Length: 188
Image 1 (spheres, rainbow, N blue to C red):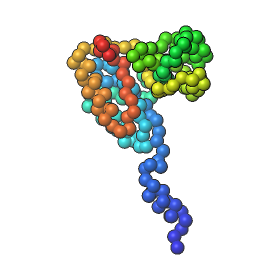
Image 2 (tube, one colour; image 1 turned 120 degrees about the vertical axis):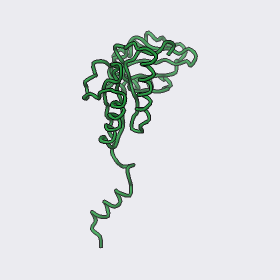
Image 3 (cartoon, helix red, strand yellow; image 1 turned 135 degrees about the vertical axis):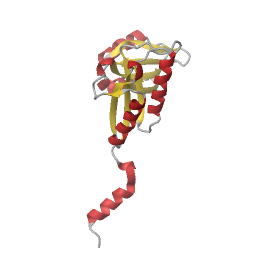
């Protein structure tokens, strides 16, 4: 004796948040000591997430900027790591990958036997992945990342403050990654 709409609404409510839509949102701003910070999130409640992120920026005397305000300080790249195959000429492989805007420099980890390449066009992610699979490479992992194009030098005390801020941001469930333009410590 209940209307069909009421039944469907009750079923949707019973299914809970698992069915809700998540959105990728990037927040950008300046932390203490003029360090630029990008915060990648995946959230079902942008109001909650922006409040959480803003509270950390405020606590550390930072300022949250508008989307795109710091884009010029970072390059958005895709990164692939795969097992190196015997007899592969890396120069030749990179030449083939240049069509997908892959950089000609790569990182090789002799101990692990892996190669890491960087693509300048994040839209080519699927094409690069398919090309590597078609060539028979064992995929270790791929991701999107923000690479700072100008690193900022800071002292140990300033680094500790920024590290603490990044930790606080990473404590939130919605936060996926945090990127900064601070220069890495020697040996990192």
